[in-house]
Every structure is written in C-alpha cells, then in structure tokens.
Amino acid sequence: MDFEPLHTKVEKTIQTTLGWIVLESPKGFPFNESNLYFLSLDGKIKWKAEKPDASSLYTRVKLNEDGETLSAYTLGGHSCELDLRTGKLISHTSIQ
View (cartoon, rainbow, N blue to C red):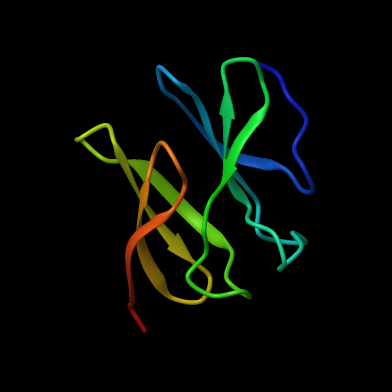
C-alpha cells in the first residue's frame, strides 16, 4: 500500500491482517504528536500510539509473537509495550 507520511519519512511498516503499523522518522517529527501509528485497510489512521511522556518519539517497533502487542523504544530511553488494536500503552519502563 502506498501512502504519504504525516511529517517526515516512513522508517518501517509492518503489515497485519487489520492494516499497517507505521513508524516515521523521529528526526523533525513534532513532539506533540506520535510518530508511531496504525493505518486501517482503507488507509485511514485508526490510532496514534500513546507515548510514555509528551516529549518522547519512537525509534524502533516490532510486532510481538502473540500478534496482539507491540514492543517499541523511544528517544527518551523508554521500553514500551502497546496494544495493537488501540495503540494504548500496556506498560513502559525507563532503560537509561
């Protein structure tokens, strides 16, 4: 699927049966938004990932083996687990 990034460039996409997980480059991305989001099959944004703090942006993401959660890391040194269906944080910890 082709789509336009919101602000920067797409660094990673992961296709699921529900749509696409999209991670945009944090470089130049507005801090007041989330650079990790989910596009439904019709190409509309279903959610933007909840962030552990307002100034964090995501740098890495992977779909976990359970197929229902994501693991992600932020520039601020957070390791996060997110719900695939909602983008809400399940847990997070500081790794610095």
